[in-house]
Image (cartoon, rainbow, N blue to C red):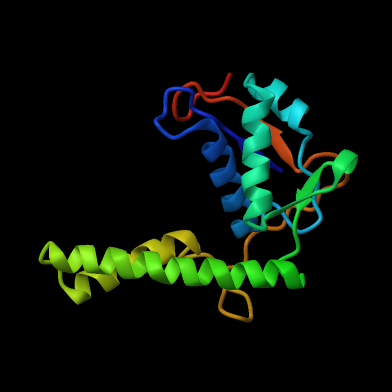
Length: 166
């Protein structure tokens, strides 16, 4: 079960804070395909925020292919193996390559070296993939699995400042 923490004082919009934490939980295996997310109303009430904020986060996650929205059945984590998700994944890879190219050009324009860019990129990739974790057979980090026994896959808390829970 994951915990969502929001920081009302952060510059990042609340819906992006929610989005980022759900994506991170999917990436680390805290949330698995098929797991239910709390209802928009429930999560908004628990976090003490407007339900439209949560709805926007879920809509962005849906549009990016991370979440399936099924009317009254609610939201659940999408399966990355589904064909529609695979097509979106390729589009996201193309977008990532364009963004990396722009970052590399900017780094080079500021006098940065190729090696510095690669080192920085490697550090961030290691950070995202949990360098130092035990790896599975494919060489990918073996994230701990949290199987949901029904109900929501997320525990919700509000952080008024980093690390402070209400």
